[in-house]
Amino acid sequence: MTNPSMPTSSIIHRPLGGLTGYRLVYDRASRAVVHAFPLADLAAVAATGLLAGAGAYVLTDGATAYIGESSRPSRRLADHAADPAKGFAREAFVVSGEAGAFDKSVAVDFQYRLTSLALATGAVALAKGVNPVEPALSPADRSTHDRIFDDALRLLHDSGCPVFRAPPPAVVEPDEPPPPPGPATEANGDERDGGPLTIDVSTVPLGAAEFGLRYLGLWARGYAHGDRFVVAAGSEVRSQPNDSVDRLTKRRHDQLLGAGVLTAIPGVADRLRLVVAVAFPTQSIAAKTVCGAHTPGRWLPLEPAKAVWLDA
Image 1 (cartoon, rainbow, N blue to C red):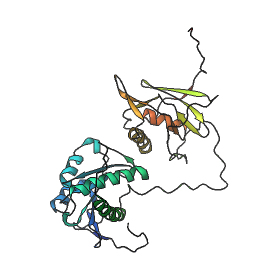
Image 2 (image 1 turned 135 degrees about the vertical axis):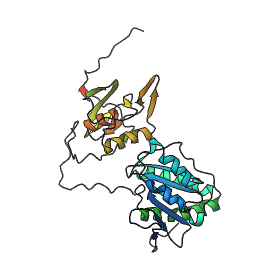
Image 3 (image 1 turned 60 degrees about the vertical axis):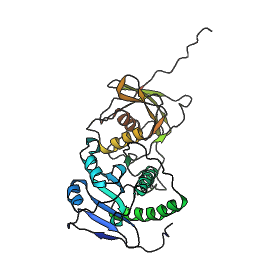
Image 4 (image 1 turned 30 degrees about the horizontal axis):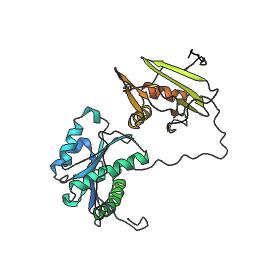
């Protein structure tokens, strides 16, 4: 593995000129290179012939990312550029070998590694097609890929790729009072807007007040737990958010879709069902995310459940 304390030198070359266009990022001591450019410039970059050879690639707008691999990256990126589902793609980052030195096995391995790292980092929402599978490599090939991958990550960082940078930890002031218990309302600029989702939390605590939500046929229920609001398993989530939702709500909705915690509802196309409970920072954020709407319905208190005894 690369010694993190060892000085390194990355060279950023702009073959087409300009300040915001195509950048070729490399290190003379490494076999890896990174091609970084706005996806709108793909035709000009492909015409240079510099995208020859297999490679893994990242498409992103800084909030959502798609990671793939191809033996012919320029052709595959052209397919993505024409795909409405990849409308978020603004910047492309292609990891390949110097002078096209990578073979297909490196590209497939790097797609798997980059996808795993993006999920672990959590800096962006990941749009995935078929989940990449870790390839079977010999010990010699794996050790070679380890060294090249370390260099590729450094070059991706130097190219400006935001996907693999962990967000900084939240700083809590020592004198800051704890948040009040119970469901909170969301205001513009709420400092908890960036709060994480907690997947598969416990079921309703004894004595907790429950709330119900209905919106365009959708049904959900939830309850307050400490300073969080938990949407219970069995609740419904819209399959597609409205176009008017803000970026943060869209990102949370994408996180749910990619977490493997939603299942199809037979005969229903516009909604999915939660199979675990999910904790949100506030009641309002929970409503926006499950409804996929900027102005969803309201959570209303539910009548306490009354047990019904049936004769044996």
